[in-house]
Length: 275
View 1 (cartoon, rainbow, N blue to C red):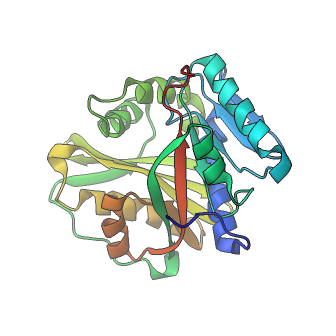
View 2 (cartoon, rainbow, N blue to C red):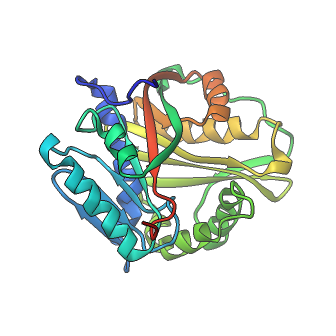
């Protein structure tokens, strides 16, 4: 049996990483008209109004054992009524400790665990070598945001139209100069090739949304744009950067100096309208 990602005594780093993740999944939705964040004492529910489990999330679960099954049913009922898919993030500090088993019993499924990785930014390696003609910059205009979204949406085949819908609706908040969420886009010979996001969230920064277009992969661009986001956090006084890695991305982050310190898992109910 796979070990649980939850634990009885999460470390301060685990707690800080989860707090950053919770801010990441709710920041834009809190201030965008038509989107909803239900910030309950025992869980965080984020409903973007967009038909994608990328942007509809449940997290920061701190449910009492006796209430757990009922609360899970309420969350499922919310998204079934809305007819939208959602993802439920489980991390080291999630409660009850057997939350994952309960989610499975209620019909949710997971694609597996993802390593939580961290890097002390004083140990960030030198900038990796990059292809000639590569330019990396923070997204500051609607055009750059659109090009970044095109790269991120290409993670799915066919590209997910919900990505463009979500970020277009949230663009006013995201493009503010003082937004703690910063998007980066890499251009190779003028073509958008890769994207990443860093969230400056207090005690740690979080690295998210790293994606490289298929035709540009294998050239170190993913490493370069990840490094650029980490360096941005370092220059803004953040000591530690964290992330949740895919299996493929784990090797890239390890080369940059990231080390695993916990595990996360996301559970989904893909057919939210089914019995």
